[in-house]
Image 1 (cartoon, rainbow, N blue to C red):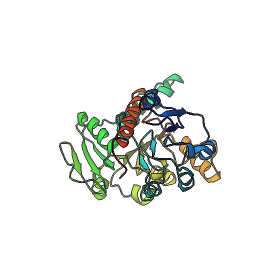
Image 2 (image 1 turned 60 degrees about the horizontal axis):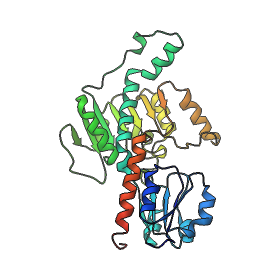
Image 3 (image 1 turned 135 degrees about the vertical axis):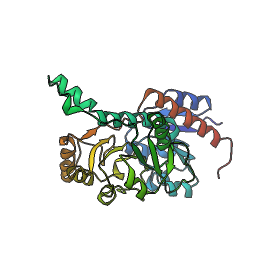
Image 4 (image 1 turned 90 degrees about the vertical axis):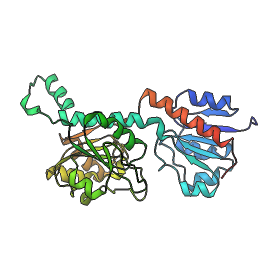
Length: 317
């Protein structure tokens, strides 16, 4: 492999990734503090690009990237890449959802149990010298019905963890079928709305799923339920969620993702919704950490290395 082949890594990754790429013969420029505008200015130098969330690879960047052979996401989402334009330009675009699917699943389970048993709330109360047992009587997961919207990597991993809780899992996926087995049943959205005690979102962010979970979707459920979103913030209408909580349709919600995660740069409308989210005691928030573990960081690097190796073992499709 010629020495001139260079790869740019724009975000922090496990050392395994740059080390492995160097062993493959690449000149690796590891610049986790690089700014998006710097990437745009220098992209014409690189054959490979590894990104996470701060850089958007759209038409302008692709047009400037005359040497680019692949761009990959160190994570699960591909909304940061113009996939159609990349394909048009014969550029491989891929992600690494296998790397953090278990981390996301474990977090979703923990967030759900936290809501059902008031764990975080109790911690704060006791530390403030309030001993409220009856007020914090919770609910058990045993025997409940859990609805999953999308049954890809994280949906399947979450369903696997739920097997030990003797629950019924109803899963809907528009593009994947025939997966009913054991405690998991393939279902329609209507069946989930009819039966679910819990709704967990595992959707990618696409033009089709953007704000798919709106008021009409959330309000169709037949009994009060709990909601977990560890997918993407913009699949869920936060204002609609707040309305459904106020109306008693949703008992509580755990959100690891928000519509705009730059919480210090919100516009007026966004700030108003965010203020309501943080002021609502039945909503639990975390800073997009579901897939963020030491183990997943290494697994993501392993997945990306494997896929990059395959690119150089076969011609472009």
